[in-house]
Length: 440
Image 1 (cartoon, rainbow, N blue to C red):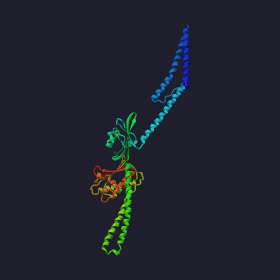
Image 2 (cartoon, one colour; image 1 turned 120 degrees about the vertical axis):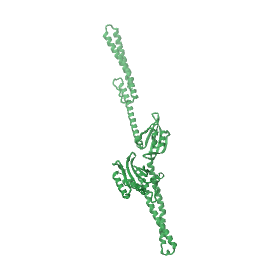
Image 3 (spheres, rainbow, N blue to C red; image 1 turned 90 degrees about the vertical axis):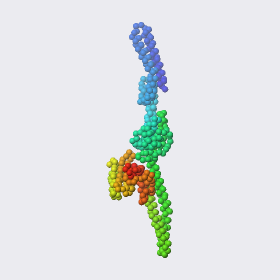
């Protein structure tokens, strides 16, 4: 570039000027009575030598300054191109290099901010475990899933599940379905882990996807499909039986056949068959309601007036059972379908009243609480409770422990709750009895 030529020309000029000043010094010292001239000649020679030295070393100083800026990432440095001898071109080139480097830094920083935001906002909970077994909740989904968790070691997470704590401590990559105690209930979670290299150190990343809600929805869909198919096939087979039984009953009612006593017995048997077939048909038609998934119409409503209406309805049905209401906070609002959710609670309170029917001092409590998991709705009684081995079966269609029960109510309640994206479980109440807990 021109810098080489202009620098060389400047260097030659400084050397020539230095030669002239040195000759002037020699002449001044060789001529007597020129004391002042000698001093001037020495000053000019020293100044010329200093200028030559500055000209020669300026390039090194500029390049050293440039390399130092790169070393410390100081891309805001600007090089001064004044002074001639091609240093303007050199300064422009170095400033251009730093500008490109600064633009690259800005792009890298922007990409890093994008990746940070992407990881922080993805719906999969991400945890990282360093080589020193330091556990970090790496994004919002993880902080929501383990809300309030302060632990930093794998063993601190043992209360969510011993297998999960071992997985945090283990370096084995892979994918596994685990059951974690989240939100006060066991939930199935798909856990994926991988080993990464971060600044030369081994780091493990774990992704957690709670799939309990999806499994519940799939289970509900499978149950409704099964009921729909079974009722359809049974009704198809039962309809001609009902028709033929009714026809036979009409034929046997002919007065000409009354004389034979066996005909009377046959007529009674066929009439009973027709009546029971018709009753079974009506029964199956009623059960087909289980196969109709509820349509949720969400709206935000105040919990206070809504539960007050439920309490009045329950008081009319079971005036002998006192109902305790608790709403925390009192201004609690619920985002749900008020009619379907009311049907769920009416069913649960009705079942509780029946379970406590023979008790001298029945007690029933309805609580609506705002928790870190969401809105919790609890129905608690002091009845006999639900045996542990039956706590999953009671939500199956047609399962019942009562002689007069249909086994539909709790299944429909679960369908409604799952359609809201929530969960319903039953456990032992603290003072005995059953505690049904819904979390929305």
